[in-house]
Amino acid sequence: MPKITIQKERCKACGLCVEFCPQKLIRLGEELNKKGFYSAVFQDNGTCRGCGFCALVCPDACIEVYKV
Image (cartoon, rainbow, N blue to C red; front, side):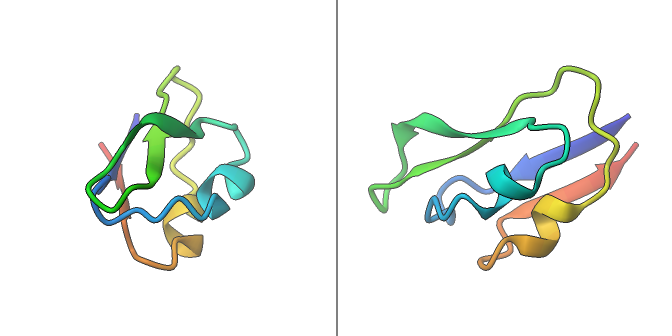
């Protein structure tokens, strides 16, 4: 099962990961980070395939995908 980590303090809430996730498992959170943005949050429901699209489109390299 893939695991995704998001460095919330580096996220600027551009929303690209939200848009490109084919399973729609990433959303913008409800808590502000230190920069004042609502950072991306990964909601794992067991359907993530570990495609890595989210990590590829992130302009700040905040997302890492691990295939465990």
